[in-house]
Amino acid sequence: MWSSAVRHNAVTGWDVGGAHLKVAALDGHGRVEQVHVLPCPLWLGLHHLEAATDQALALLGGGTRRHAMTLTGELADIFRDRPEGVRTLVQFMAARLAGRELLVYAGSAGFFTPEAVAEHPELVASANWLAAATFAAARLACGLLVDIGSTTTDITLVSAGRVHNRGYTDHERLHYEEIVYTGAVRTPVAAIVQRVPFAGEWLPLMAEQFATTADVHRLTGALPEHADLLPACDNGPKTVEGSARRLARMIGLDADTAPLAAWRRLACHVSEVQLRRVQVACERALSRGIVDEAVPVVGAGVGRFLVEQLAARLRCAYIDFGSLLDARPAERARAADCAPAVAVAELARTWA
Image 1: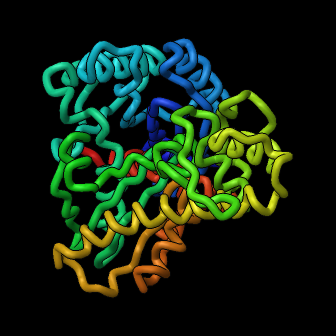
Image 2: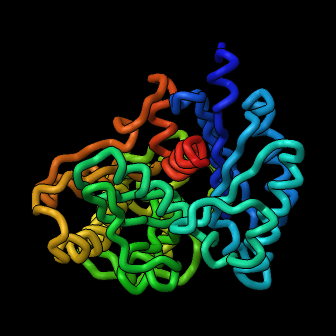
């Protein structure tokens, strides 16, 4: 049980994404007590966020007095533009948490009250990466933070307590490859490769969303069981056989036309191309010369199994984001999956 003093300073952090809702509860000393990830297909409507928020609050047992939020869900196409998305999501969370203090993360500007967000929505939009990087910068002499989530990869250099980003908005970060639109679960296979080697030939892929990276990494055996929370492309079983069937369709075949080993080999090729794409972006960041070549690579997100491979390729030590946290053993891995939610809670805990 939390003491009254610890409970008074406790914070709940929310990361409101377009596909998942992530929430982390910290006690007054910054120790991670609970972490939850809930599916939330926001593009289908706000009622999914309502259901996920209700479920999260039930799991938390009501939550804490102070809450902090960051978001990427403003990109969901139910919103006319990003400012509308920011305002809508902040107002929604403020209403759901009525009677409690809500701080909205605004990156370099710190935190806003919900009422102040309307004046500067551009500071709030998709700033969750900076929360995680700021958290890591305070705990490492230097590092290359690579957060591979279900949909995107964030790449950020940190050293001496500073975050060395070149871009801030999604547009700027895309330009500098500080965000790479590839993830461990939701990325369509056709967004990674245009052709694949199969049966001794190079075959073009169908421009269809028959399979995603969840299928790829399930076939390679690397995908954590808890990482894939949304339905498969065909609403079929999320099994090795189901993934083989979906991947086979990408080249116009059925899974029974080749042995399972052939589909595993094909998945390994797609995984290799994806990893190489992230590696190139990391090499670009390291080429700035801000940190030594031996900088540790810090892995976060449900796809950090790929970051471990990446660190080996870069000949750098690997550090799991979870090792930077004060957390119960049962929560450490889940907290590393949800780095921005944990980070925004800790930043808000010490906010004046």
